[in-house]
Amino acid sequence: MAISRKLLNDDEVVVLSTRTHVKALLVPALVLILVAAVAGYLSTLPSGEARDVLQLVVWAVALLFVLWFVVRPFLSWLTTTYTVTNRRLITRSGLLTRRGHDIPLARVSDVAYEHGLVDRLLGCGTLVISDASEHGRVELHDIPQVEQVHLRISDQLFDPEAHRVDDGT
Image (tube, rainbow, N blue to C red; front, side):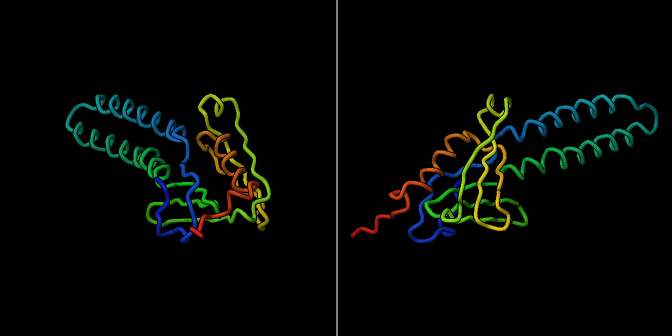
């Protein structure tokens, strides 16, 4: 899950790497169960000469629903990563078209987290990074163990020893 070493600078070290919490797959899983149940039921209804064609149509529509509402979110979840190094916050997402965003830790002015009742029960939350750019605020939703991630990033930001890299001298 960690970012490829070839995308890091020589003295850059990965502090933590994660992806969106598995809760992001809850709705797609429910959709999969619902689509399978409805398609199974509807495929038993047709009778007569057109039965085979109608069943094929039902299962083709079910397949389209599964591809759009289950497979697509799963691939999005699978290919989205968040990595914190001793120098920057790196976000990467996308299967065919990769998108990335890097925020140098030197530009980060504040790190906060938010989590509601469901997030607290599931152990995740939203990490809010404020930086000195024109966007000003980046929200990373459904981060697992968001409080621990918050602490690790804060350590990198505010601990002068965290930025020092041992060069062997």
